[in-house]
Image (cartoon, rainbow, N blue to C red; front, top):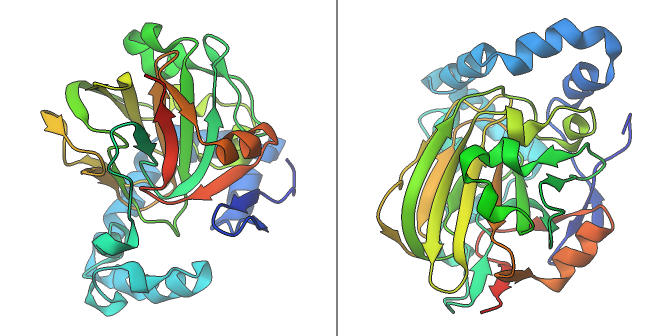
Length: 297
């Protein structure tokens, strides 16, 4: 992965593009340079730096960063409910709401939609406990889900990786009843493929929240928000009760982050284009509400 660009397929156009990475030099140095061991531990295994960044971006003086990030990452502000100048801090902007019409979705019960904007990688059938992200090292379902893992072994899994340019609120991909939610403390490794290729079991080591949701068509699925370097907080606005498809589940404060959705065996099949791109080792740029999978039952 050293100096190799991260290539992503634009789902809407079919074009392949190289991802723009905020802090790329720091990430590559921390994970690919053998001399960076101590710094890597200080930055990514301790939450202190990320907490400080999160706090800084809560203050009003961080507003000065908003327009430069919009310009650098080509963020489409026509989708946002408020213009750039109306946000009180960078985190206020980062967790911005979008207009409802900017993210349409299928209301059909058999359709499962993307839970977030980001770059998606799908695993149609897990080899029991193991899955391997793009150019990465093996990751463990048991390490990620802990006591909830058994029912999902041999199932299916989707990783939606969010970047700073993305809309950072996440939504339920299917309706259902929340059975339980479990917060797990941990490190804050980057979720960028650069880090995944360096060896840490990001999904088993990072801070995360695992929520089990029971659905009439697809059984029980697990929704996991995974924290990452620079993430000030994972804020869940719904953690109990009955939920509807595309209802907001929560949001991330500043930083890259990831949503993982895990399905029980034999319940869903992913959309064909996501399967093809993932088999080629390429993530697909997706938007919340777009087709992710459909029920087999």
